[in-house]
Amino acid sequence: MAIKILIVDDDPDIRDVLRITLEDEKYEVYEAENGEEGLKAILNKTFDLALLDYKMPKMTGLELCARIKKDILLRHLPVIMVTGKGEITDKIDGIDSGADDYIVKPFEPKELLARIRMVVRRTERDLEANPLSRLPGNVSILNELSQRLESKLPFAVCYVDLDKFKAYNDTYGFEHGDDVIREVARILIRSTRETGQAEDFIGHIGGDDFVVVTTPDKADTLCSTIIESFDKTIPSFYNEKDRNNGYILAKDRQGIESRISLMSVSIGVVTNEFRKIEHVAQVGEIGAELKGYAKTVGKSNFIRDKRK
Image (cartoon, one colour):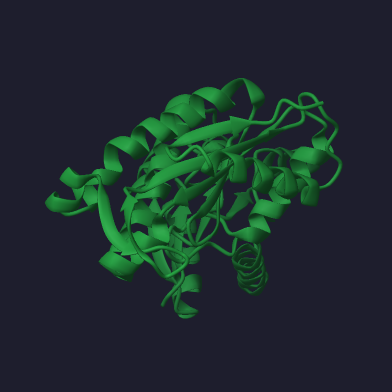
């Protein structure tokens, strides 16, 4: 599958040079002539990399890059800033806005291609996106948690786990199970956008396990929003009979056929409000413990760690 690259530059001659250079290397190239047009393209199509001109009308490359990196869904799109100056301040501003790399005009095509290959390779390695949900995987999750710990700022890590998902998967099949996982990803994204903040992070640990990283003041509202949306949406994934019954007939973990209630969601919330957390493994251990408590309730709920 060809790598899709978006060129955002108000100079048609520069776009022509970039397009010819990239198409010669079999990249799939798209163009936008200003920052606003570039943002519209990014919101409507999935790209593997964006080349942004430093200075453009309507929205500068710096402004567009900052918008990309603050968006939960877009922040993992790699950005190379193309600047007409060699001034160190331009380079620093580009990196500060979240750019993954920069190149100065006029540039050597070979250098540009080398930088593109490096950034794409590094992003693929670091992102390790889950192929089902397209959310960041474990490498990105570990990086995010490490950065939060290093910052010493207040954080809240919400470990999200589905209950009775295995029984649903066994009864309805893997394709329907995959639909549920994708819907949960959408619920997390939508809920975070509604009640969270731009810097929040959503990751997919694997299977039916997710993580949302926010701040302590947002955690309760965010968890409540996730639960409300999940409980409202999930019955639609059952047939009418099971939905009306409120359960399915399936084998439990001991292999005994039982009435198993509809799926629910359990969330364990780890914060550094009341205790000092020094390493990522500690976050995971507390999160697993809290999720275990939450699962004993028997319905969608969240439990927040307030122990000192």
